[in-house]
Length: 218
Image 1 (cartoon, one colour):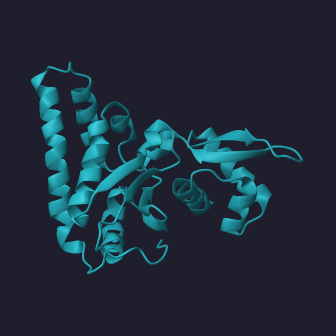
Image 2 (cartoon, one colour; image 1 turned 135 degrees about the vertical axis):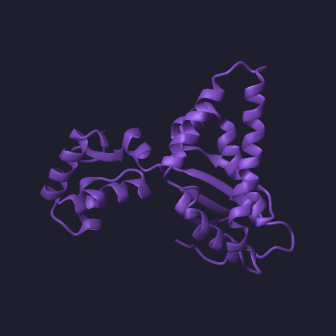
């Protein structure tokens, strides 16, 4: 039973919002059983829901993870870093410790790039992007990518330091900078979960002479 609820949490983490019918298909179990698991997760404060209107028929409920559930996925290191950043971001703008926060975020990006540089390989941009995903997925920074008309979009549906990112935009900037350093190309952040987006999202616009992404990758 617990394994089923863990799978529900993982599906909601990756896909954002899902209905009972969608979860039933993904889990291959009957809708009444899905509802029982969801009721438990709602009671535990891990899942919330909202009504969604249809053009025809009765509305249905869309289920999503709560902020409590998102924070529970963070590592101990991420929680410690989050507390430090929240404290520093609350300081006055002229406070030297806040200036140190900005310098720390730059160094954080550099250290992250140094730690994973050897794992990001490939002769084409799409090869490097896939190896980047494989390397950084465990950090919760990125989990997938896809090709669109304007370039390669990287995304993650989990924020390992949601509370800190709400008060310190520098943290999101440091992750964007780390991705740019690892790929050797410009990276733009176009979506943040803390701003209400469904996922955190970055766009890589290939420079002239770089290979275009060839396919959607998980």
